[in-house]
Image (tube, rainbow, N blue to C red; front, side, top):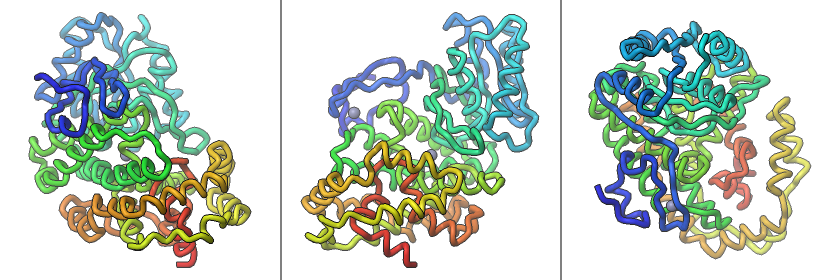
Length: 453
Ligand SMILES: [Zn+2]
Ligand SMILES: [Zn+2]
């Protein structure tokens, strides 16, 4: 397939993951986009591809990582395929019923790899979110490549080069190895647990909110924005919305569509160099709740399920914007109450407050001069900002879609109390410096409305 270059929104519809593999593509945003991914296949009996790629790329000592579930659905077949091709393929099977990506899991993985008699020159993960986060982090620390055989279409991080891990009971995003190959058997994907299918859909539907936030940030702060990536992510997202009922019925073509969308979004992040195309205020809410659940010693619901609920709330924040620009002369000189903010951060984040405060300092988030510049940009561009509301469905429309796939409609569905829901709306913005609908509300003084609810 020939691809018209440089990339722009108009060619997004003709683009495929296969066209992206192993090549740099000049883009109308001024950059050359590139992914490290060299192979991508979604096909029946995909385990046969594993020894082919290992051999083609010249590796001799693959190390297989899975858990008891993924061993049953796919891992044992991968092991057999490697053995039949003459690879010893030692490995490790996590016995945990609910695997947690923490120090203990990392230590066990390192210890298991140390017992591989001939060493390791390639890591192979058979699994989904948590398992991959662990393997790609260990592979990165050891400077070794990694590939994944995916078992569930549950999140958009398969192509990612970072791992969210829990270190000292805090969720942290650490550098990790991005995969050389992503392989999946569509029949295995379609048999994934129902809540993982819903989580994958939730992570993708969160992109309405994420993309609106990105354009908002571009308008208000001038940050770089790529119409090609946006068009790709939006196209994947719309395909998943349309396929949601068939996904719930586990139709193989629809589940494959979901998986493709998750990989496309992941490549979008690779192209951008960070998670901006995939993550805005709805993700900050999910991270906030997950941190609170961890601090309380509870296991959090799957990421995409929390993101979906976050996206319901951010849709409400967009709808709450007034039609006339609320920036007044007074707002331009109002400095905000820095001390009250800091007290609030210490109260809400507790032991996790220091990095949140440090981030605000490092990124000058309370600098009055920068705030004045943002308010001036908001005032000059209010009609464009207000029009971004049309990029998102109304909350009621989202809820109707959520019913079709079994996504949460209330905070209690994700084990979040009404107090924590409200805290998230006020304080989740401070987890990241990224400009979002939260920061717009803050700049406009609309967040005090939330304070008083
Ligand atoms: Zn671009
Ligand atoms: Zn996500």
